[in-house]
Length: 123
Image (cartoon, rainbow, N blue to C red; front, side):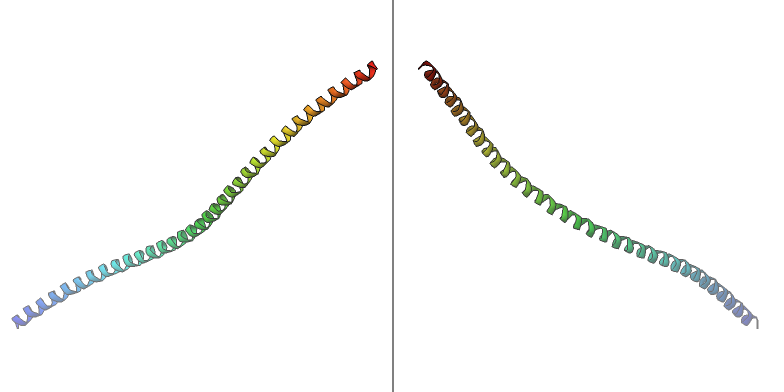
C-alpha cells in the first residue's frame, strides 16, 4: 500500500509539473500569438504605405514625363525663335542699307536740284 501511495504521489507530482509546463506553454503561445498579430498588422500597414508610395511615384513619373515634353517643346520653340530672329536681323540690315541708299540718292537729288535752280537763276 505504501508503494502505491508513493507511486500515486509521484504521479500527482508529475501531473502537477506537466500542468505547470502546459500552463507556461499556453502563456508563451498567447504571447507568440499576440506578437504574430502585431507583426501581421505591421506588415499590412507597410503594404498599404508601399502601395500609396507606388501611386505617388507613378504620379511623379507622369508629371516628370509631361515636364520633359514641355521642356523639349520649349527648346524647339527657342530654336525656331532664334532662326526667326536671325532672319529678322538680316531683313533689318537690308532695310537699313536701303534707307542709307535712299538717303544718299535723296541728298544727291537735292544737290542736283539746287545746282539746276542756281543755273536757272543765273540765266
